Length: 122
Image 1 (cartoon, helix red, strand yellow):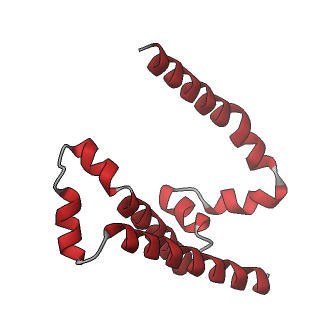
Image 2 (cartoon, one colour; image 1 turned 45 degrees about the vertical axis):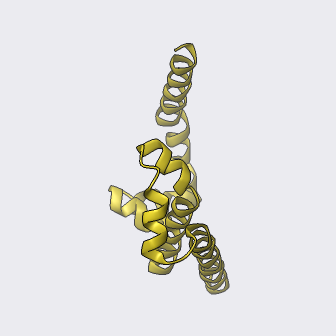
């Protein structure tokens, strides 16, 4: 119980520090001003964080799904369904870890290619 309270206290302290100290400082940095002006809403922030690129957004989504597939055993244990891995394996007719690694690899390659093209155009 002590560790839970400690963790919640630390997370709360970081959140307060971000809201009252870090965020105002970031808003005042001239190079980040355009980013923060563009990112008023939640979806505006998401669109700005993916560099206004559907390719980058897609690669982030693939990275998340790949990570979830690799952690399928842990997720199944947390959900209390030990048959989940078998059900997903039967659905994909392959080992979910292979699919997870493939998705993460494809996401990294896609992201690297897109960021390279963004850097070249800037």
